[in-house]
Image 1 (cartoon, rainbow, N blue to C red):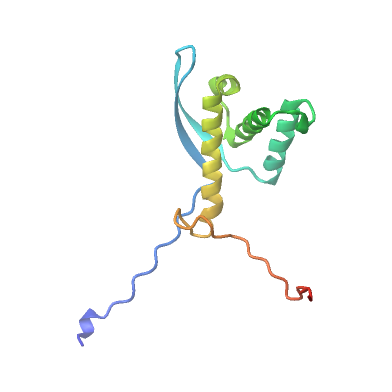
Image 2: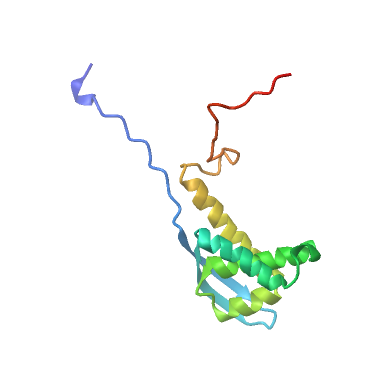
Length: 147
């Protein structure tokens, strides 16, 4: 054994945490031919923000949710979602997200991807194990039915 070659084990790499707020580089060509290149800020909402999404969707709907088609529900939900997630919404996003479903659903998909990554990053999990749960619950006095 050579004492000069004794080394401490390498520390395990620290989990990469996703920030609550990220910058999204967006390039968009509007139906009128205008090109928009902008940086949008996506921030994961807190509990009040999540409630605001539901309230805004209801306000947008203007009718009982069950009266809406699935498509209308998806649109109103997406509009409410991006209105909360995207901080300092530029005028062009405000206008075109209401008119152009490709822009609307692309923005919603990206902010939801950010949210999923943010919640999963706390466990140090990456893309490898999409089925692992962050919440495990068991009761010490669980009732076991008899047969």
